[in-house]
Length: 378
Ligand SMILES: *Cc1c(COP(=O)(O)O)cnc(C)c1O
Image (cartoon, rainbow, N blue to C red; front, side):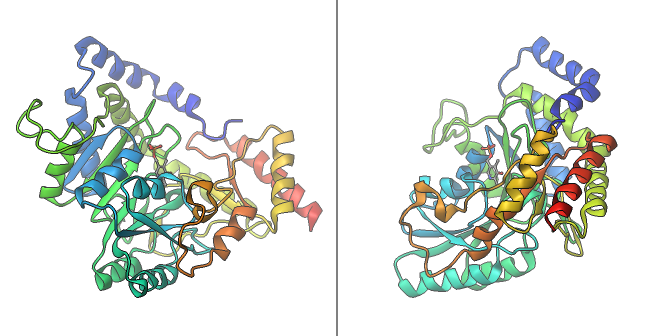
């Protein structure tokens, strides 16, 4: 059994995929081919924003957004403690200070109360200026945008939506990638929409920022390639990856998102009452980047993981520690916040095999094994 079945996906998409790749090879337009612009248009339309600017990966996408706003030394950027390292790393890389917030136990997303306390603590200290809130749509589920937008407005901050895992998620009819003043995503192969290598994109409705983003991603280019008007980076999406993504985006919209939602519902049906399952708040939809359950405690989590492994079922722990527990952030100012929920969840969480191609048989096996093991421990 695969944790995320990319082989099966390729087998299903093979005729379309091979043809799309062949066309790029024939044209030999490996950088900035027409497929890149076509994909950007498809993605912007799918997400419901004016501009999509593709780039080399999801980490660069976050960096590009921070560059557009000139975020750097003296700026505070609020990041949920429970996320992939890049959400906070990019902030520190730009010279700004990441300030961590705890999360909510039911959604694993940023806790708006913790956020507001942290903003007030930063203001009270008077050394940093609160500038940006990085919201992460963890495991595919959009964050609490009603409350976070209100806090952003109240304190005059931007929202940078890290939708690296959020693609396909919805919030009251709107799509992930449209909730930030700037939003970003990643096309790392294991993400909900992944390519066959690294890739990423930035989304915004702001014309001026879109133009600057397009410049920054190609060496700060001006009117042409050899006119450089700002210090930028080399962060393009390869034509071949754009062609691959167009095939995958079609499948994603045609059936993958619907299929993975059905599979998530089957997990819920089979596991409810045995373990704590992810519940999706009313009006929201998850893109199901992960299906993560919570066990009673660390001992039970580790026992279930070992039992599944012995029986050929791969699982993952996203994430074993919070940002404030990362060596790279040792000694950073926590502004009086505690991270009790993050720390507790790190000990109890377990991500199960999930993809639109997970078979009924394999899924029933996963459910049966978990029920067996947790039942024996009860
Ligand atoms: C994967 C991920 C990133 C980074 O994306 P890359 O394409 O690997 O650079 C950033 N934030 C989150 C939440 C992610 O899951």
